Amino acid sequence: MPSSHLLNKTARSDYMALDIGESCQAMYIWIDGTGQTLRVKTKTLPREPISIEEIPEWNFDGSSTGQAEGSNSDCFLKPVAMFRDPFRGDPNKLILCEVLNYKHEPVATNHRHSCLQVMEEAKIARPWFGIEQEYTLLDVDGHPFGWPKQGYPGPQGPYYCGVGTGRVYGRDVVEAHYRACLYAGIRICGTNAEVMPAQWEYQVGTCEGVEMGDHLIVSRFLLHRVCEDFGIIASFDPKPMPGDWNGAGCHTNYSTEEMRNPGGISAINKAVEKLSKRHFWHIKKYDPTGGKDNARRLTGNHETASIFDFSSGVANRGASIRIPRHVGEEKCGYMEDRRPSSNCDPYVVTEALVRTTVLNETGELEDFCI
Image 1: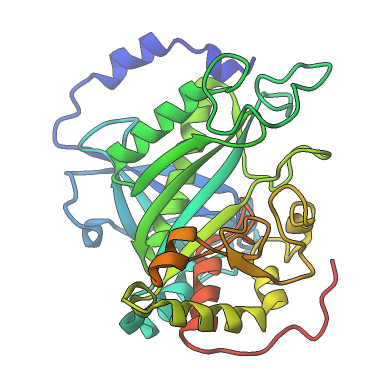
Image 2: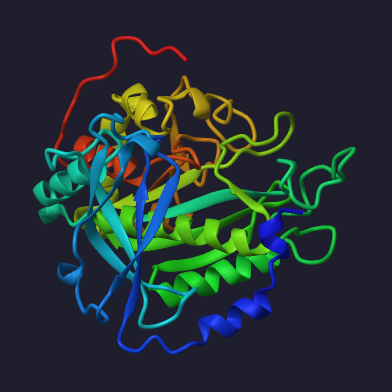
């Protein structure tokens, strides 16, 4: 058991109840040089901020996060979105930040910057997104939470949307995370147990443009922070357990205003055709390793399409792009891109979809190898 879990939470609650006057604790959150891991630090503000414009820029040691050299290590945190803090309570805030280098230019892992530019260019299309974030709960030894230490649970089947001892593992974490997201102002719209035991999913959306990335990144922070209190780990590895077990994705539901309007199925079909011509370009964008992580998941089995083939179909969870049954019947709505991995950068994924389907960018990779 990790020592952090053994700390006395009752003693902590006494201190958290202390009156801090008009002061506000603002926790700055950013993505580090891995493109996946989140970092945080807290600043005292003299009063509760009303808007993001009131939050000052800050800095940090980029050489310790893989974002700068030690000889010129200062990086800057540019506040871009603000949420309520469910751990410290009101009036304290969570501040999502972009990372800038010493020239005040975006660092390599700051994909929000270009995503925002693309969403502004395409705003007339009103791109909407909803992301289904899958993840796996692990014990501190890296073994799935609740699994037998010297073996495996029963085969997949009873765990999806399951209830009851022996069918679900870690619901306390899921419920705490759900409430934390609602309190913070995250557009979380649901959750369920997934096909592999100890694997869960929550859904965020509908969000327009760059807000999709903002809400998903902060929801991931909240999950890690909740798990910290429970002494377990949330993994976004797209294939945490080899063998006959489902992997974890970040299925991305996407539509434009034209797709949502009556007769929008025509626009959906055109978008699918555009996506089919840039399959490998998108695959390179859909996980931080350029396809290597996703290759372990997109095998053509366990409700996935092969990473090497593009496919689409109505209600087909084995396709690259699924058209929901009700969309096929109503002839308008949205599509689901099932290729993004659970550890994807949502800014990269949403930007890629808009570049291909709205800005009509073309060009496939000349070769693709993993």
